[in-house]
Amino acid sequence: MPKIKSAQLEEMIHSYKERRIAIRKRLREFSKVQPADYFYELVYCLLTPQSSAAHAEQVVAKLHEARFQYRDVNPEPFLRRKECYIRFHRTKSLHLLRMKDQFSVIAQKLSEPVSAVELREWLVKNVLGLGYKEASHFLRNIGRNDSLAILDRHILRNLKRLGVINSIPKSISRKHYLDIEKRFSKFAIDLGIALDELDLVFWSMETGEIRK
Image 1 (cartoon, helix red, strand yellow):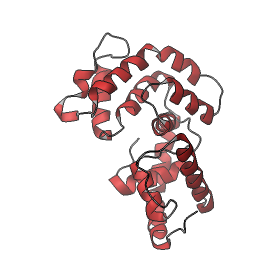
Image 2 (cartoon, rainbow, N blue to C red):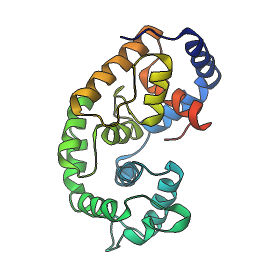
Image 3 (tube, rainbow, N blue to C red):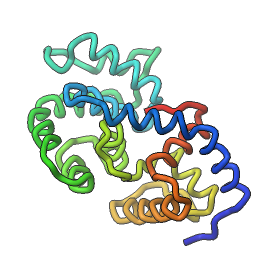
């Protein structure tokens, strides 16, 4: 593993101590999400790749208002609205419609007493548009990820800044994702800080917010 950079580590630990109470409160909120809300949490995680989290939240709210889960609604016009534009809106609209059609199967899988690792593998293989990052994000947002890493650009940038990884990959294969996740997990264990909490520390350091 690359050498950890002490100055950046001190800054991160300081940020963690400042935000720890708010971060733990946010994680408790994730753990209280009900199965009835899983559909729109999954919609959110299908929208966020390469798009603003704030825009994704706005689109989810509009789709919820339109009762997208239960009505024959074309999601594409919601995704291409200027004030909450979602990149690759045509492709993502197709992903949303495909997920909607199979959601009863997804919900059944989520109700089974299986590990987070097994759930993530199943989601990646069965939900079009979900990679390891998005599946981990979804499971975290419903309180089910059990310290799986959400390796988005914020996390990768901070892992590189701290010296946990040498470089930020342009694309991540399954093998590479699991390798970086293992490094991130060891880093968290060595610090004595839960990986889920570190994830939100990095997010808040980058954005100034503790978002979902």
